[in-house]
Image 1 (cartoon, rainbow, N blue to C red):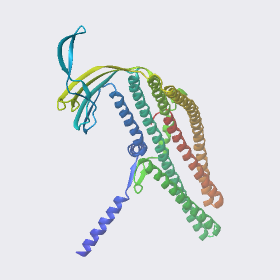
Image 2: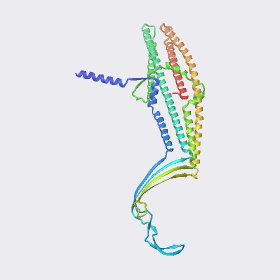
Image 3: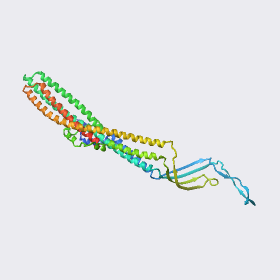
Image 4: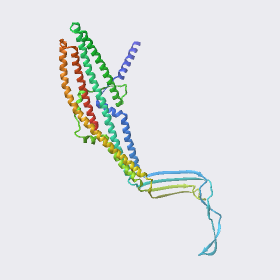
Length: 455
């Protein structure tokens, strides 16, 4: 029974470890979607859109009546007022002539500081009728702001996609290079076995064995180096996609299969880049925001016409003997507000907005030059890489043929081990260079897709 429990425990631990370290195969589309879902940069860009929507709600609120209620209850002994003095007999006159009659008058005197409870309640409603188009421009400004933030989100998506593709293609490239080195290592081991056999037969010297052994160790170290570089590239990919660092991922695909897509979509002219680039579109939308803001600020000194209404309830504010009487009433009307002079504050704000507009236009000019340079550079690089690819494919055929001849010559004792090693190293070098060309083609294509606003 104890043995069964022990076996069960070992099995559970083994399966758990296998699950923890299981490799996850991901295609490039899956990796891009993970990055767009998990990368913090996407959360920042999406928060900006929510901010613009909140500002839009605030701008909408100015088209609705603004209502407020203010109520106070307090105890005081200092309410100024009037109170009647004791009566005084005053003669009645008719056209200045006394009639002989008298009446008692009660003149008013300052009200004494008597303690009392006071309650006031006011409900006010205000609605702007005209505000110099500030409300309309504010609403239009928030719409432009949301548009700009949407373009920022698209720019973040495009930039993140480019980074993910770069890391993914680097992984595919390193996988292919490791495979080339492993193939070369197998060939080196075969040469080593051949040299040992020839040495035992007295055909080759011990030098050949030592030479091949050194080449074997050299390729082993290169494989270890490439695997370390691949681990770094995988870490970069996991950071971009938000995957835990302990996860094991494998980039599903081959750089040889993917290289052909690099020639599918090359823009014919720069206008496609300028019109499609998300950064350029975002700057254009921000110009719209500032144009509306300039109109809002410039209207700061224009008259504001508004309608208002008030309903009030008051208790404890009357003269005696009416101190305990509840009174209520209302008031409606229109008002006009005109700012005559604000110390040139409005003028300074307008100049500030215009300066920001000028700054954005300068950014656009600089971005235009940068995009044109990057477009021309990528296009020329693609043409050069395509030519290099064709040349190296021919070089590879020649090198493989030369290696085959050197291998036959070595087996027949015609060539030396140095000639065989040189022939094999030449094949490996050309294969690695060809893989790098294919990777660079993919990256240039991805860069063009980013520049023209495509993910």
